[in-house]
Length: 235
Image (cartoon, rainbow, N blue to C red; front, side, top):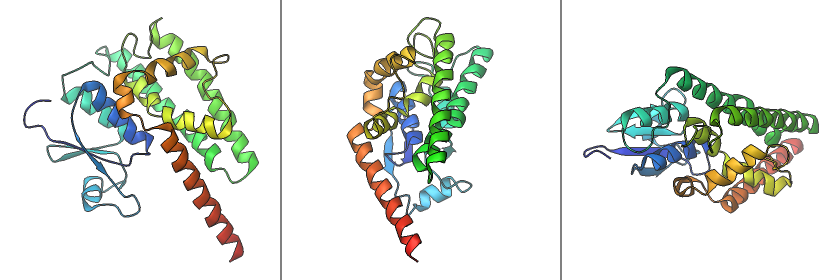
């Protein structure tokens, strides 16, 4: 990192969107101060840095805040001309990368979270159905974008790899808790192989939270939600 650059990441360890930024910083080889936020008692720094959404992640670069995970990843790539490029230089290829990064958040993350937080079996079933439909679409996207190489970015990791890779600890934790494989080696062999390849990269290992810790966190959150639901029914 260039001398004089000060990087702080305001985040929460369990957030895959925070992990997304950590992955970008890790692949770029950038050092930063990891500021863990208590989301039940948000700091003045977070509230002043992201007054619109009041959410993590926020990257503070030399006192200037940047918000929203995909925007932060793009900023890191443009502001620090070190390490591998995370976005293609070609405008069309760059647009395609942004399309699939948005698809991951809109069509994979949204129904997947719905399935985890569903209050009825019908809601859960619909969320699971949409999640697997998105996974199948991403299998085709990987085939097209990789051009026979190992990653969505081709020979090297790019924005789409980081966007999807940031979810891996949670996806595996979901598999552990539900017994259902999301990236099935039979149904989506390219994604299954990609997951193994991405997970073994040193930069990914440095940024991804431990699956056991995520499982423990998820079970605790579920227990709290169940207790709150039970309490509301007795009032």
